[in-house]
Image 1 (tube, helix red, strand yellow):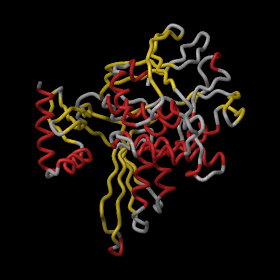
Image 2 (cartoon, one colour; image 1 turned 180 degrees about the horizontal axis):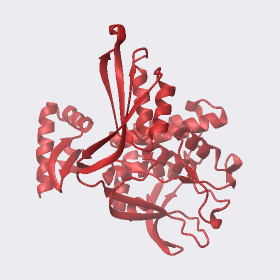
Image 3 (spheres, one colour; image 1 turned 30 degrees about the vertical axis):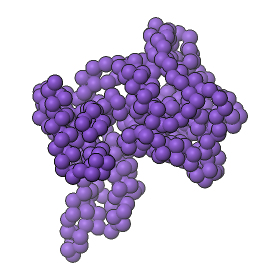
Image 4 (tube, one colour; image 1 turned 180 degrees about the vertical axis):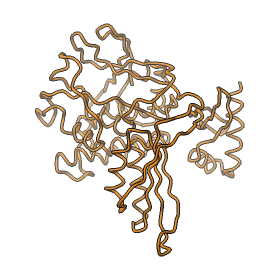
Length: 378
């Protein structure tokens, strides 16, 4: 959250959005501090009064009953689900009965939901991460002394197959450089690669730990992909499947997107003996072939995959939020050479507005698009 605020997210907007969580007994502050030669933003969440220990189920109910945006709820719940599954495996406990302890505390809940809100408010549609730096040592928790990386952290990294690196500086030895909360947020949202982009702003966030001779900061780059740039280095993976339960495709597509796929589509086809089948097509950056191929071979019934290089041209797109006459809503803005050439309202938000105002959905779409265009032209 410190890095998001440092990169331009107003603290007041973040606190206002977090009020939709309907969680009491906390307040947030942001201050500029020095970490070695770098100045960064430190966010503190102060908790007042005694707070209860929360189970995974308690946290899910808290988020689901909140007044947060649907997209924020979905991302936050995905993060907590990953945390819960990791803790459940480590402690041999059913997911519904997992006690979050540190992770279920008010400040950790604010961390997860606040990061998700920050991405939404800044219109960040894709999130990329460098490898996790992991040190060895011991960390003290309410479970007692645990080895580093903390078991929950390592489980989250293993489940997402996230890349790791050794600490970059001797002062990092024996320090908890990646917490379970941080690992859950990043593995839930991020792709582990470095895309081409036009950097527009940079934010530095920091916690309380200081390292001698090394700035303990999280650096966040925000930018856009270039307009209509030919994207070489893409591959297309395809396979024909005629003997698999169709319910599995949703799971396969989710895993492939998490692993870096740019687009996935299913095409009905007929194979030998006129059997109906599905052709699974996956467009992805070069360099992801091995992990995507493994997912397809493990998760589907196919015996082989076709691979070929492709190029594409892509227009810039970003997400814009604005106050329409029907309420706050998001639209997807398509640009070419800086010119707005397309505006698409977000379906789920328009559907809720249509139900709330008892309006035809197409009228909501039309009104939101017109007002969004006027807002951009203003």
